[in-house]
Amino acid sequence: MTSKGSYTFTVISWNVAGLRAFIKKQPDALANLAERYQADVICLQEHKLQDVHLDDPKLKIREHFEEKLGGFESHWSYSTTKKGYSGTAMFIRKRGGSGGGDDASKKGKKQAKIGAFFTSKNKEGDEATKGDEIGDIPVSHLQPLNVMTELGLPKHDGEGRTVTAEFPLFHLTNVYVPNSGQKLDRLGYRTEEWDTDFLNKMQQLEKGKPVIWLGDLNVAHNEKDTWNEGAKHLVKSAGTTPQERASFDRQLGAGFVDAFRHLHQDAMGHYSYWSQRAGNREPNKGLRLDYFICSKDLMEDDDDRKVVVRDSYMVPDELGSDHCPIVLEIEMKK
Image 1 (spheres, rainbow, N blue to C red):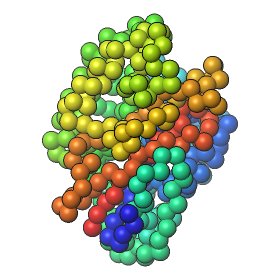
Image 2 (image 1 turned 90 degrees about the horizontal axis):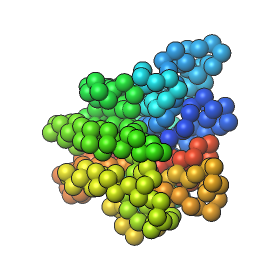
Image 3 (image 1 turned 30 degrees about the vertical axis):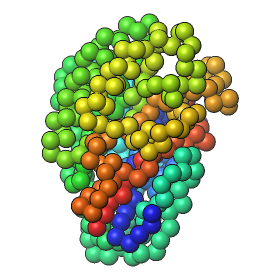
């Protein structure tokens, strides 16, 4: 619904499977995506960079993002235990207190309609940005209070798997969940240690305000999230083992909601990952591995709610990785 007094806060998540190769092949992809969906936050997983790479004069990665995403502030988490591995990043749109500068492209952005699974969102509206508000929404609601590039858990933080931004109305955690491995050699670590500790962290954050965690969660939750459910190899394949699915069930059972599945309960064939080696993208033989997981409070709408999740969907026409971007739209109310 489009109405005065609300603002659509848009979050995009994308596993880019190696950022150096990604920006070489698709130099304008992230900038175009930000413009197409008028993104407030862009979260990347598996960038595979080290901190020295940003300012490497040969790679010119920082220069690239200053040119392409100059209206965003970037926050990076790196793997320190293994080079060329994992890594997450969060780009947050810069805000001017007077509503000028980098906010210009977001003027009057209003709440879009619910329900488009794969379609581009054309946000319209010409309501002026004024003072310390965008429309009727305080600019401060769109600015992070704090950004953390670690969970504060030493046994996990060495792999650079999270970036967490605290906004006035919610916490937002970008996460790249450990893959259990081709031989499932990390299955125990992933399900018995990481999943448990990460859930505990999200529950701690939730005591203060609602939580959204998002990214490549490396699990296809159930039969609606795989193209070949029932295939014998799935029970022994990372992302579709009974242990991983049961662990994810426990996380959701702790009071959290898979936004896409909640909003689109019967949707089939909506995937976010396709094996490039097998050539599975064109025939849409995929898995849904990428999610927005939200506190239940964010899914409920009444007159007292200041923030409500309105839609979640994939963008399968964006290439450049074996994953596609996923999008979350949140209505912020006056």
